[in-house]
Each structure stands twice: as C-alpha cells, then as structure tokens.
Image 1 (tube, helix red, strand yellow):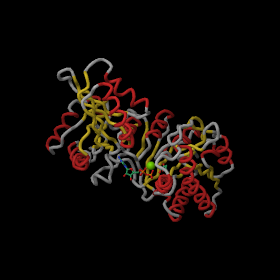
Image 2: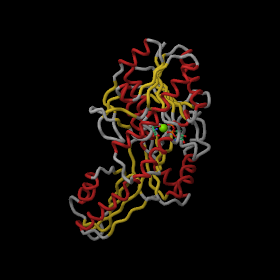
Image 3: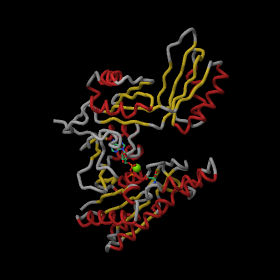
Image 4: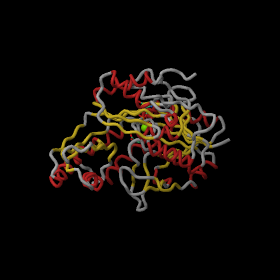
Amino acid sequence: MGLIVQKFGGTSVASPKHIENVAAKVAATRAAGSDVVVVVSAMSGETNRLLALAHDISRRPLPRELDVLLATGEQVTIALLSIALEKIGLEARSYTGGQVRILTDNSFNKARIVDIDANRIHKDLAEKRIVVVAGFQGIDEEGNITTLGRGGSDTTAVALAAALKADECQIYTDVDGVYTTDPRVVPDARRLDRLTYEEMLEMASLGAKVLQIRSVEFASKYNVPVRVLSSFAEGPGTLVTKEDEGMEQALISGIAFNRDEAKLTIRGVPDQPGVAFGILGPIGQANIEVDMIIQNVSKEGTTDFTFTVHRNDLDRGLEILQRTAQQLGAREVSGDERIVKISVVGVGMRSHAGIASTMFEVLAKERINIQMISTSEIKISVVVDEKYLELAVRALHEAFGLDQTPA
Ligand code: ADP
Ligand code: ASP
Ligand code: MG
C-alpha cells in the first residue's frame, strides 16, 4: 500500500457529472489499496473567464488582485470534489493552497513553490481521509494568495508528490498520454510509453503544454515518477522518469511547437563590442525573456540582430528597441508575431549526426523558408511563418517515422 497523487485538469472537472466521474476514479484507486491525495484545476474555461472579467475593468489589473481572483476557480472544484467523494462514502477534506501551506515566493501570477508543509496531509491520510488540494495556488510569507502560472496545477501535484514521497504522480487530462506531437494538429501522432525527464522538459519548454515546465523540473529534481493519463479512457498512459539502461532510445521522441513567440529585429547596428549587450540589456531589465537570438555577419561595419520574445511582450519590446535604435544609431526596428517555433526533440540525437540536415531538407521540399535556427544537445528548433505550422509539423512527423510504432 502506497501513496498516489492524482491531478485532474480543467476538462476532467468541467461539470458536476465530470466531478462525479473523478470521484469514482479516486474511489477505485483507494479500493485498490492506495492512499490518495487529489489535486484539481478549475473547471475548464473558468480561469480564462476570470481573467476576462479583470480585463473588462482594467488593461493592467494589479497582479496581486489577479491572483486573489484566479485562485477562486480551484476553490470551487476542491469543494465540489469533496462533496462528490462524501456522497459515495469516502471521507474527504479539501484545502486551498494557503491552507496546506504551499509556501511560494511573492512573484504574483508566476510564483514558485518554496516549501510545502506535509504534516497536515499526513495526519489526514493517517485518519483515512482523502485529501483534496487546490492546484495552481499558494501563499507567500506575508499571507498573500499567489498563483503559479498557467497550467500550474501540474506543478502543485508534482511538488506535493515530492513533499509526501508519493509512489507516483498521475496527471489526468483529455489525452491518454504524451504524444509524439500535439494530437490536435497531427491526427497520426502516437502515444509514447515512456519518456525521460529531459525529453519531457524539452518538449514542455518548446511548447507541448501537456505538462507545465516547472512540474517537469520538480519531477526531475526529486525523481518523482509522473504518469500522464486520460480521465475519459482506460490505458497505461505515458510514464515520465529518469533515463535508465533498459529504456528504448528513440532517435527522435517528438515534435513540439510554440505559437506564443514573436520576433524582433533591429537593422543596421554599428558592429562593435558591446552591441549585443546594448540591445538585450534594456530588454532584460524590463523583465522580458529572450529565447532565440541571431546576429548576422557584419556588412560595411553594420549588422542585423534578431531575437524572439513572448508575444505578450512584443509591444513593450518594440518600444524599448526603438529607444535603443536611436541611441545606437541603428537603421530600423521591426516586429513580427506571425511566426511559430517548431522543434524536433530526442536524446538519441546526441549520438547521431544528420538530424538537422534531414529537418532542413524536409522543410526545403515543402518550400518553407527557415527564419531562425537554434540547436542544443537534444533538440533542433526553427522559426517559420506561422501559416506553415501544420504542414511543417506533419511533414517532419512523417519524415522522422514518428507515426510508426518502433520495432
Ligand atoms: P489540462 O486542462 O488537463 O491540464 P491541458 O490542455 O493543459 O490539459 O493539456 C492537454 C493538452 O495538451 C492536450 O489536449 C493536447 O492538445 C496538448 N498537447 C500538446 N502537445 C502534446 C503532446 N505532445 N502530447 C499530448 N498532448 C499534447
Ligand atoms: N486553472 C489554471 C489554468 O487554467 C491552472 C491549471 O489548470 O493547471 O491555467
Ligand atoms: Mg494543463
């Protein structure tokens, strides 16, 4: 008999009926002999609805108040699930993040978990209660409500599993596992049986939103086995763990894409020491994260510099870049948000050459122009016009044989 943390995402708790279905799943796990801690998201669409309410009033709602607002979504579902559990004869108790004492730092809207007080939960479990915890939220040292960023309930679940030393953290969602690419875009995508933390981290960082990035970092750091499963269908799901000897080493495990980035370009910058710092320094100071960067070869003493940021930061980034351009005497500044970043990911890449050239060849055949390229040990990313997203992902998926079951 062990302990399992089960997390149910928004679509899994979309209505009272769905919540009763979740209760039945929890009951089955319990009947099989495990203690269960459940983490739930807000009902699907609720977090967006709350955000829209705030934006109806203000273009820039106060981050602190936004968190007070957004945290209500999960408070609804913990209570409803506990009611559903009681109805089928299981003793349950719900807690908000603050009540468990999921202590976070004070960066509202994207807080990081610092500490979790496992005592109270252990006490409830010892008394045979099912503990239901609100995902996505915590409390800072001063008692302010904080939230963990979109998709943050995954992180709540994995962090709890780590703190409680659970045997497994199960993430129930609307797909029955992690796929070779988003099944909504490529119908031929295939479910993966297993994936390493490292691969999952790259997939998540590069845009596969099935798990929040922070949750995978947590899992890897504390070695929590994570299983992604469907709330609506039976099956083994996908197990995310550390790399082990017996693990089948796929050359490429998946293709991720990210539609949330925008590209900023500054042209005709004098090519001299300190230019990159001159351009990116003010961007960093404004707390804008930069992803890909390229600087062109200098022509007649000037160069062009391009980088990508989150789409939400495009306007602010442009303003800053315009000021920088004046100071540096650059020729022009432009921004483009009609881009998508597509990445091919796999640990097998370490020991195989030629992945990049295959990728470029496939894109060339489809006459898709590559605007930016970046590589790391286990991934290759390109930026292309967003209108090619589906074409590019499907062509790559096929070219790398991801639709075929490995022999
Ligand atoms: P939840 O509300 O349960 O947290 P999410 O919408 O956050 O669910 O995550 C599940 C979704 O992630 C799927 O519906 C799917 O469209 C998307 N997704 C993106 N990339 C992948 C992938 N490689 N494998 C599985 N799902 C993916
Ligand atoms: N409800 C939050 C969101 O929609 C957190 C989550 O679902 O994980 O982002
Ligand atoms: Mg999610």
